[in-house]
Image (tube, rainbow, N blue to C red; front, side, top):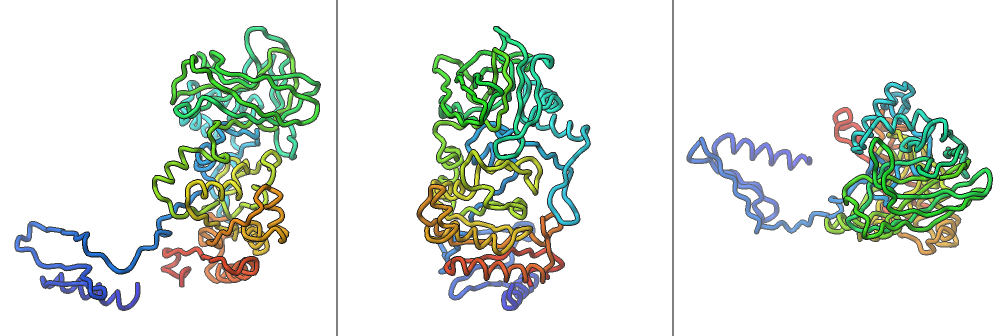
Length: 459
């Protein structure tokens, strides 16, 4: 607040306290008029909406912040339906680090079990303990075994990009029950009954498995088969894609659980690197309902990718071939970052919404050089090194992103790479210079905080 505004507020307050008529003006407009009430037991507030100031409120003040937190991106904005579709090694959080910031991982199995069962209840699973049983069996968190322990063996393996994959061994044949792995899911059946799958997997010898959608059965078993696809596997990793469509004669509850399975009726030994499931009506991998909600709100600008998440995020992990991006630990919140929603997907989302994109760069453990290369990737021509990479990823024209922010909440010890006010001022200078060299036309914002030691951060 400026000194003049402070004087005006004090004067108005003193006039009110003295029982006088008080007015607060801006140019030739009365913003506030106070007069004593004839009845001390009754106060009346009148708002005149016909009196308008000549000053226009910048609509960019009413943008949205979005972050890789909880189900905001995955199973939210991102249309991919399955939980842990890359079979990653789940990181359970035990809280924030008080040294360098970021999340600390939980190793106590009892506390992990509590988190897993809480997650199962939140998902409204018929038997939340099945998630814990699957985790103890050797399944990636979110997946469960179908079949007895002496017939179906689960264990971790190494995927095509070097991160965790899921090995599934079906030891004996069964004519009655498909055996393998499953998870409970919710489908946007109010919009579509057709879904696209993409799976990267291999087998110890050529064979096949079934991708299926079932109704839930009693006791955690699978019920009626609603749709299926037969997938041939070879000794080397291959990517297979196709569609699953639930016929109109199959009765399904629009908001109810269904079961997604990867199974076999014959003995197989397979390694699944990833299994992705999208509704057919996805908009460049974004959820159409979410896009509609944002469009209806007339969203002017969206800030991404964080939040605390950005201080441990390296943008190159989230670009390129969707099936070659590595799964990493979410550095701020625990869980996993599948890197299925990166820069190109974010820009596409903003264009579908009709809002401006704003990127917050990693000023926690990131470098000015990394931030500058991000600017070049988004705004550089095809003749620049990063612009050429963007073109190779299918986006030849520059994005022209105007608004960039240096870091998020770097005053807080929960933040990866937190710092002091002079430390941030120094860091900001370095980022600003590097990013402006990459594109002089951008606007670079700083992060502020009015609560840090009585305003010292902003000062």
